[in-house]
Image 1 (tube, rainbow, N blue to C red):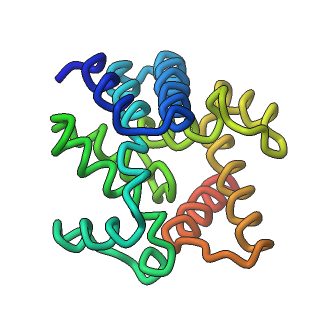
Image 2: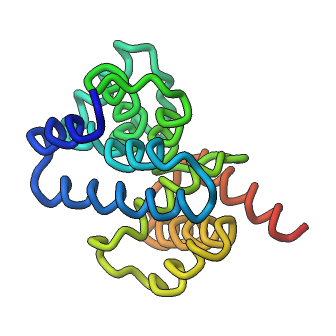
Length: 190
């Protein structure tokens, strides 16, 4: 299935607003791929499909992940919404024919990040946060500038804002996100 066919299929599966967001992430990931010398088509596909399982009901997210033997953390059992990234990678493979491990990994880690991310993973993580249709969050102008000037600084900035926002709200922070934040904070200090 080529990307345009994927786009048409995805349009049928997602609400209009989420589809528009997916197109925004596709576009942003593509522009960033040019900037950082990453395979353009891989970035476009990962950006387009990153949320393809977003609207699976939370109880079904758990059962679908368990059925496929995907690991589910304690945090994910408590917050099954977090599973949409892992499940989107599975759906990208099963329903859209994506076999490229770089693309599948970028989809898997687009919400939590992970230590030692690939450039494609960073691009999709950041593109999801900064795409043009996104609600303007604090410091968005600066973060968007960083995205095209210093990928690691931008990643760290988003992680910092996300972790602090969740902590302030009293919400659970996925352990992988904490590890990722600590990893990139440590790298920056060196």
